[in-house]
Structure formats: structure tokens, C-alpha cells
Length: 121
Image 1 (cartoon, rainbow, N blue to C red):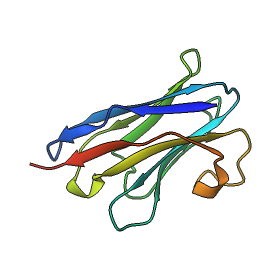
Image 2 (tube, rainbow, N blue to C red):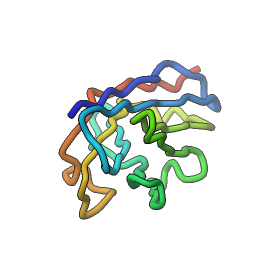
Image 3 (cartoon, helix red, strand yellow):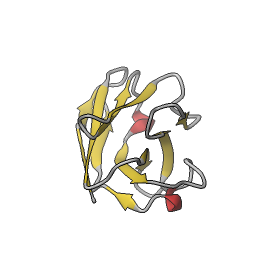
Image 4 (cartoon, rainbow, N blue to C red):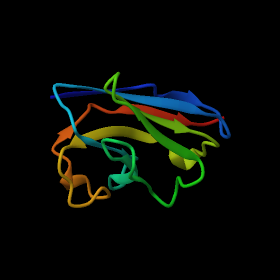
């Protein structure tokens, strides 16, 4: 199983970015996005079930971020809009087939390498 996160970069406040998480060697998995800023704990951002019927967002990103997936491409996306400096972090995608909670990082057994998002003018 491999997860490859991409799409990070430097963006001005108010701008947008779309992250992608390409998954291989896996099927019927739920996927989550987490982020970690320097000196802070890893934070839940968003998650989506295999068929997309269940979607969850962290309070700090509700109304600004949208998670989606294309199972034909084995890819999960995180569209990030109205970005703020406090969104600056390394963003990780994670996946697993059975989750007790979509919000807990320790429920996910497989992780990508992370992609840096920096929001700054």
C-alpha cells in the first residue's frame, strides 16, 4: 500500500490550492487528511468514506475546504479555498479499510509522506 500526497506550495492569504492523494495497492478504503504545523499536534482536517457517502470536516476548515474522491483514479482530493496563514502546515493523507473514528489519526494504518502548504503574503 502506498499513498502519495502532492499539490502543496506557497499561496497568498485568500488563495486556493488542491491537494491530491494517490493511493495504490488498496481498495475499499476510507481516506483522511491531517495537518501538522511546527510545534503543534497533528490535526484532523477532513475525511471521506470509500463511496463518498460519509464526509467529515474539522471545525477550522468547515465551509472552506472540500474533500472528494475519484475511485477510478484511486485519488482523493482536498480543495482548499479562502486559505489563511493559520492553514500553514504539512498536510498528510491517510487511509484504512475499517475506522472506529474518522477523526482520530491513530485509526489510520497507512500514511503518505506529507506535502507542505504555506499561506503567506
